[in-house]
Length: 174
Image (cartoon, rainbow, N blue to C red; front, top):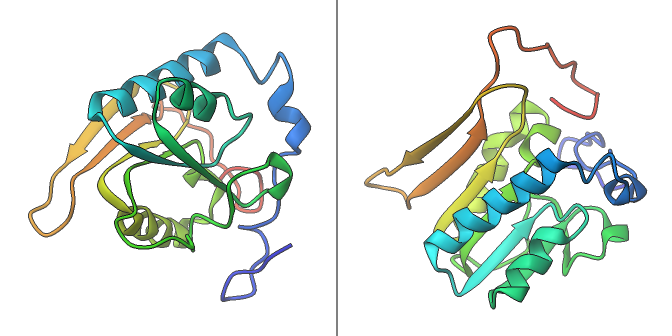
């Protein structure tokens, strides 16, 4: 298990056993639809290169590779077989190295205080765009953020319902 700079092991501990990604329950119709949306969002951007952070069962990376995109995968869980074993909070790649960073259903696994570090790393390695997805229960929305002093950032997320459950730090989701 790796530790971050503060010695906190929670953010880098494997939270989901790799076997969970390869079950009928995990590969539900809703999740497969999410994979289709991820591929659609990346395809709209017409990238030459993509970094997928958080590879899960590898289906999205496989689809992107089948569509002709140069895909590099990154995950902190070496047992999933990513190209790069690292945390989203410390990506060991050069600045502006890929056209698009795809990071779906990952950020909610980080303690809140580490999310801004992760977003900074995503922005640093992307030369053009980032496609982010954060799950919750309820409605979906998409936000396009264009700041004059930063690169463009497209955020696709599921919006929380009015009665969203409170998630406790230390669990799988923050």
